[in-house]
Length: 621
Image (cartoon, rainbow, N blue to C red; front, top):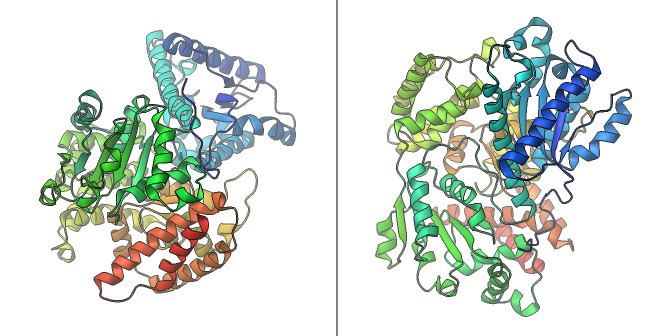
């Protein structure tokens, strides 16, 4: 049996998950008694249990509270532990559910838990106990406005209890099977996460296409591996990192030692890159190992090797020599270690430096794949009409199949679809195409590299709809190195302008910060890493934010530097380095980014940031 790997202490995990699924439902039905409502959900509970036994041959632990809610405070205490120790949330939606303070509290608590575990939007599914047409009845319209943003982006099925009687049982069984498979897949990943194998962020639930590329990666890394680094080459915005992560999750059972994402931007030597796993794995080094990268990495390998193959994703390699024979020498006798790298450099640039790799050129999405990506963000993952689907084909043609640009457009169109958005905010996809064409022809964008022009055109409407608070948070985030944004720092700086960001919310509601950051993550403007305190942003999106949100950047820069100095003074006195280590990542990334920026301008880098990063690393050792 494989032994679970240790992890650094700060990483949020379900350390003691007692239940696989938490069922949330309104104890009083829309037009039924509490007893009838409980009986209805009981049948659903039993069906789900039976489906798991039939489809997967094992039982599933489901928390299902059958007691009536007579005292809200007592009920909160009773359910809170079960909610916090469950891995998946299943909401049974009805008009009563939308009106219930207790159900809203359960939902908000679950949303907080998703954010704490870096899995925003991933850990819940919905079952409709009502006909969706009834959602738009006047008596639920006000409540629905509170829920729309979250509900329509979740996986859902229509419970057969509310179906018309003339629908065959086979339809109900098919949807229950679909629900079971969806929950099982997420529980599989959560269980894997619980076993502490790897540091990948949660997968993009809307990843589509790339089937041929996934097959090629499997062939090169699993079927006929020759132990060469396998590379994904392509310009920015092609989805290289997303594809490598999708492969890792698809084949996660083939890598019992874990799938590990290692940031390589600006790195010229490979041993220090692998050494970062010392902190991921919570390894305590001897004094001798602390002074020698090779010995530190050997400790990592000694731990991982015994469990079987591992996948290492070397993300954003910008120095070909990082993969030279000399740098890879420590991996020669480690056939269990498989490497994928992503890079914007061409294979020829690697060849010119004498580096031997197995490269794949990542091309743009086909029209069909790009339209499927737009469809995946539409309400219920379907276009409202054939006419609107045809408009989607026009959009992807204008965007030349650039995945990042298509996804940015898809998110905007999905959030503002007339089926879910308020009438004054609804956007018709057929009208959107005209605005997009006009923006792409804007003379100000001429001469800009292609993908930046497309992403700018698709992101601009989203930014225009954000309020000043969201824009400020994005402005502050864009000051960081794109792969390492310290969200607590962002919150502290933005709170200088919006003190409510740090205020405690009513226990039955999400606080302002949690609500805002979930919204930005849902739009994929920010993405969480395996540590939910650290976010990333695509470098192209960051460049667009710098251009489109220029207001007050000098003031925000000054506030960030002030915050860095304050954290520097505090961290110099820190003794619990296992807890404080996460703050060094933004230091290091920002120091490297600023050093690069100033060297390109032939000026000196602000020394205190670089010195602080280096000094703090020495103290941490």
